[in-house]
Image 1 (cartoon, rainbow, N blue to C red):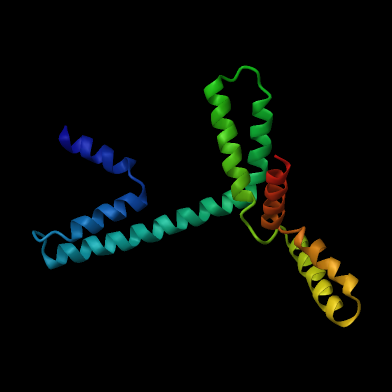
Image 2 (cartoon, helix red, strand yellow):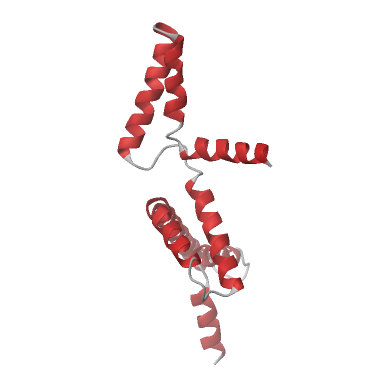
Length: 160
């Protein structure tokens, strides 16, 4: 019975938590060198698994974050939601929007190419041909989600 409870608790731990637990256990003085070595190998494997799952989660949020935000906005239109559910959806939408705005480069290749092209024209044009071509720098910066988010946040603070 106790073994079942322990096994259930271990299953509920994330790979990162298991890795930390194994690190603590491997430092025990009662273990043999072979057991310590096995714990350290397991810990390294769990760290790698945690790293891969974190990367997969980041990739999913980056690729599907906009769709998730749209679904949340549609869900907020439902009148049958309780106040707690509505608050949770609003909080989740805020976190997703903040995460989406944390990237310096746009997500699609076309937008990246246009951004770099406009920035290059702006920088080269401002120094070699005409200072007015420096406005292309602003146009190129408008493709960056991070810069747009920061500017809108600043404008919002000024408006209050």
